[in-house]
Image (cartoon, rainbow, N blue to C red):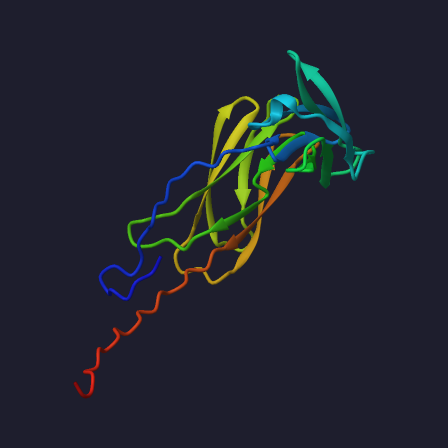
Length: 232
């Protein structure tokens, strides 16, 4: 929130509360990262106050050839099994899964599925937003890189053709690294692509996009003048 106080132009308002779920999938949004050519299954719980007596029918995916679904029973409780077929190409798959219920509210449940298909080494995230460094307050960002098949690899160097970003790579395990990014002072570029060089012959270079996050200036609002009432 913002104020017209020049000493404290911005402040935080914290609100706490509890939301009771009557019926729904847990999670409601499922994110899966998978290697191309692979298949993977995930279980999604049915939760909420009404979950014990509900019956789901007509469970469907709008992309059944890539994201298939079916109801299964785990320890006597119904769950949703999501089966992902990554296919042979890298890219993203999004699917909507819906199921009808035997009650009026809610009449149906929805599950959103996002799948990122990549080569064996994957960078998370593939797009980074960087802030301009302030005096004494650097704002580094981190990229994680790991092998789906847990194959060892090394990061040999990180290159920024635009020359706007400083990068430091550090090994966390034989098959997992992270790279810390820091925007250099005085850069004018709005964004670019980092080239992360590895020791793997099948993935020599992994590209990650970055973009500068704009800092919006807070304009002070003039204090309202209280006029005298006429008459009386």
